[in-house]
Image (cartoon, rainbow, N blue to C red; front, side, top):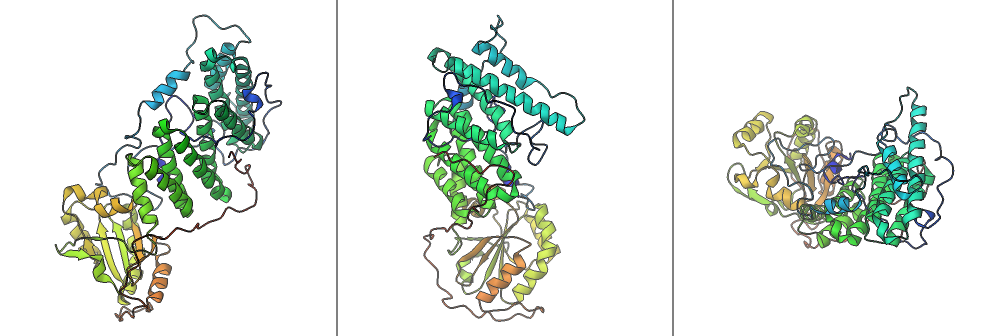
Length: 507
């Protein structure tokens, strides 16, 4: 379900954290980790089985989404010959990663070994621990024990280094490295479901933000909170909605509070929006996309966000669709007013479409017998291949085809206008020409078509005898193109998380 988001984030250079977000401005004093004389967290981290597995031991984090081609979701594929999209973040400040890394990269071994007990010594030890491979053990419980002990030791040493240098501006570089090591270790344990470490991660992130909002430590704290929310949103189905909401909240703050971090914050906000779209949290998805349009309109993700938001606001409103048919005749969707319509975005090279077609075709043909109009929007480039496929499958639909090579594949003007990045896509329009849904699937098409035809005054029969469509009241009229406000389509349950602590509030 969440494969679409895999295209949206970029890996933060030099860090083992995924690009992330920062906590909202703190309301409380800095925690011990950022104060002089702070003591290391006493005792080992809470013991418990890692949440959902292999991500926790060894890797200890989700695989970060990467910039790639237009999104594809489970059961949906892109056309084989579709042109590649611009790399994610290509429009953003490409030097941002290098600047931050130059500020805090102290992992090189010094010419003279540092004296034991100094901040330099603690940082050298944390670097060594970070590079240390887990011991050999056949027992998963023993491996987990070693992993937790290693991360806790990194936390202890990092806290001691912070306590030694946090007041010395000349040693701010050491402070930033220690903060990075501390936050990363906390993240590894937090992603196993350790509630104590989840709370500590939020607390430390708030402290670093309060100390210096634009600092590398504040940014890394942000990244760790994002990675935590992203990881739990993907791996804890029961509480996924809560963690998606948290991901949205953090990514929006990061985008607003760190204007120089667009190379990371823009893909993050886009990913959070797509994740909520897939979870049917439409209002929250729109809040991310709208903010991207407002703050990063010239970026690749910003322009895509505008298109996706346009599509998400279509229900209850008429889409703007026109073009040429395969018969080289002009087509205007308005010509079908008074009849229910199914719009299919597809390609002969889309494997998911080929698999779904035999399943949905009988349903579509029965609905056509009751008056349904079907409009196909093909992303194919090869006209001969397209016509051959249509003839073989006996698709008696109106087929829109763009002969201009610059308007083929993912450059199709309709798909780019409405942010359609997955194939097939099925849209339904009522007899008034207004969209009822852009999110129906092969599994729900039969039910959704029956509901559409019922509201249009017709019933799907088992035979293929064509029946006259009895228009619903108001047929032939269209609503204003101004989209209504989108209502929230989900709510966060009040129950607490089962495997992890409920996302901490940082604002």
